[in-house]
Amino acid sequence: MTTQGPHPVSGTFPRSDEEIAARVKAMESILVEKDLIASDAIDYMSSVFENELGPHLGAKATARAWVDPEFKLFLLADATAACREIDIGGIQGEEMIVLENTEDVHNVVVCTLCSCYPWPVLGLPPNWYKYPAYRSRAVRDPRGVMAEFGFDPGDDVEVKVWDSSAELRYWVLPRRPEGTEGWSEEELAALVTRDSLLGLTDAITPE
Ligand SMILES: [Co+2]
Image 1 (cartoon, helix red, strand yellow):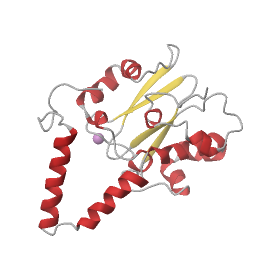
Image 2 (cartoon, protein in one colour):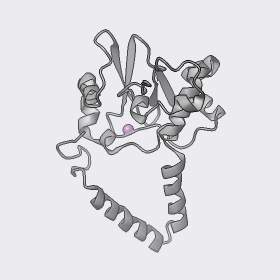
Image 3 (cartoon, protein in one colour):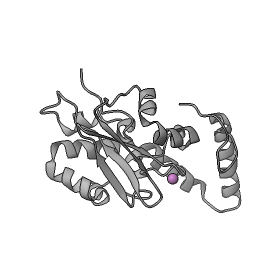
Image 4 (tube, helix red, strand yellow):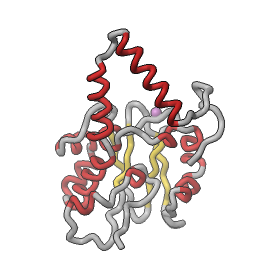
């Protein structure tokens, strides 16, 4: 997705990846130079966000819910506690709510105000999640946004849009794809994408 227009708060336009990388590098140099942060701390944080947090953890929790009805109930009742039970949790995931997609209801997640996102299960948000175009259109025209992701939930399915905040961060439990009876948790987890955990698509249906 692309976006037009300046950011409503900062007034600046989204920048190129190269420009963002240069600005981050400059800020990092200043923080290290002023002794505000050690460079190994920055390396550690980067490595956590690149290698440890991410949609593979949301996929793991989803696959567990698909094979374990008790865990699924726990996840829907108290996502933060259920995730903690399988060693998933941390900053920006203190209050998570999981929304179950069904035959009749398809849920979509957005943060209309900024970019609140459940880091422990999804990692950092993609750039488009932060852009005004997504934040407004996900509310006004969720079916149109899903169509851009190549997905159509079907006319007889109710679409609900959920607005995350700093206090509450939503994510979606996609429907278990047909044709996956008897699959292992690892095999099932491979069908769960980031976009499906945001409700923009379904999980992948195997051939
Ligand atoms: Co936000």
